[in-house]
Length: 116
Length: 116
Image (cartoon, rainbow over all chains, first blue to last red; front, top):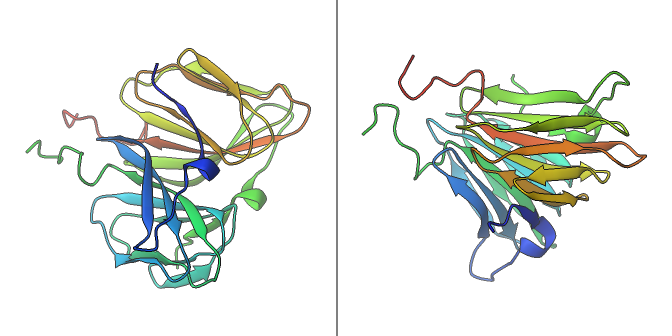
């Protein structure tokens, strides 16, 4: 039977090498990951022309940039980068940080609008 | 300047009439809502043929059905209903419950694959 239920706290894992992305689910329509950042780690600023992204903070105090706004966030807060808006996340704190992250459509699995 | 940051706790609002859906963001690619259920309220079981849905519990202990699995969930837990899998949520507890909910693509705004 496929697993449909996840505990984000126990799904998290961290590496000294770089930020970890733990995938919970993916399809051509979307992905849902847990991003796990140790102190000093980051997903550098970037833009997706045709994909929306949501960052929802689970733990810690990550610093999120969306467009020209940058904020230190905390658990329960959500940041949304519509398609075409530059975004990124870094952990400037001394504690671990985790975020639930959604992107739609999936940047690698989605079929382009023209079907190619 | 568009707002890109949200606090899910202060976004929530409840009604004695029915479960509330507070939209944070929508595009043809996805929506992101906060579902707010008072005791006894529910989103009845249903299925979307071409859309994935994610329920992430923010507060309370909602009961979530995905396919043939039903669980009482708590904050930090996530349930994912892939396209075509029956799902629903109800609040059988005596306290309010809130969930962050994502669906991709947007069931009303998305352009069908055939472009019509």
